[in-house]
Each structure stands twice: as C-alpha cells, then as structure tokens.
Length: 253
Image (cartoon, rainbow, N blue to C red):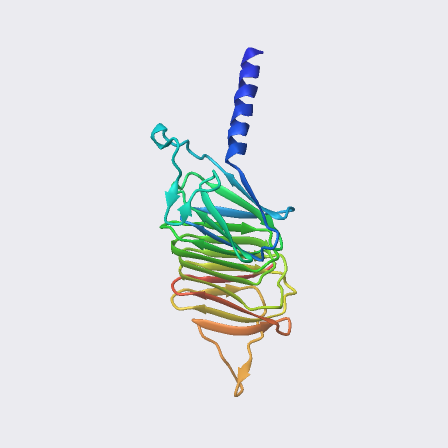
C-alpha cells in the first residue's frame, strides 16, 4: 500500500512539473504563426484559439543558472518552456532556443491557422498534423518533413531529408510545391483530386498509381524519366513534386 501511494505521489509531482513547463498564448488577431526550431519539433491541431507549448524531458537548469534566463540566437526564453514568443502585427513569432534534441516539444494550434515552420539546426525534423490552413515548411541543413491530414496549400522544402505529405483533401485555391535536394518526396492524394501534376527527379525514379493524362505536343507524348507532366481528374490545382537525387512517389488513396 505504501509503495502504491509513493508511486502515485511521484506521478503527481511529475505531472505538476510538466504543467509548470507548459505555455499558452492567445491567438486573437493572429493570421500567421511563424515557428523556428533548431531541434525536432511537432505541431498538432487542437480545438482552442491559442498556442499551447508542451515540452518533454526538459532538463532542469543547473544550480549555477539559478536566477538567470536561457538565451539563444533566437532571443530570450520568455515562456519558461525554452521558447521566445512575441507578437508582430498579425504574426506570432515562436522560436525554440533550446539545443538538446532529446528535449522534444509539441506545439498545439487551431486547425485553420496559417503557419511557417523553419528547421534551422543541423538536424531539424518537422512533423505537422491536422491542419486546413496554409503551411510553409522547410529545413535548412538535415531533417525530414512529415505532414499529415492536411488540405493545403502547402510549400515544403528540405535541403537534405525526405518529405512525406498525406492530404485529407486538396484545396484548389493555391499551387502546391513539395521538394527536396537530397531525399525522397512521397505524397498521397485522395483519388478524386483534380490537379495538374508536375513530377521531376534529376537522378531518381518517379512512381505513381494515378492514371496521368499526359498532354500531346504536335501529336507526340512528352515523356521523360526525369520529368513527367500530366493531368488527373480533368485538371485543377497545380502540384509540383521535385527531388534532385531521390525518388518521387505520388500515391492515390
């Protein structure tokens, strides 16, 4: 019985410490949230009109740092969660200034929020899920980008890493561009999506289970192992998938 009570007590203390590291900010009047992180980061949709930051495994500062604030190139920690957050007009700027990859963070935003997510570190993996707003995502050095259950528009680019995107549906309002210099691009679309498709890989292969209607030019089909252009479901939004050295996978859900 004493052992059980001890376990419950330690669990309660752990939850209290975790809650102290969480941070919330209203999104009233905010049109874009602009996020930058030098370590892996996860962004998930929730049903509230606020930014919620939850940190995992955040190491306690040393006794020498008592009374001091964490600072980095992105600013000074003004959240208690290792982030710098400030409002600039209709934009909310969110910068992760922690450097330890094991100190994961999950950011929660309303599903219709527009966002820019920039991975600025040596390894900056990005995961985004559940949004209907516009998404711009990029990694500067090394890092995969995974985006799921979204509608677009999306612009995603990785310098060195794979880019995987799964669409719940595809908005027809703006073009979609997904690319990587070194890595694969893997995109899944609902089978009924109307789109004009451009698939390009300089050194890799191109695969799809869509029936691409490849337009004729002077009675000839334009077919290349490096670039394929076609139409699905009578055409619609422009979708460009590019990889310099990896493969392209376009999947019909």
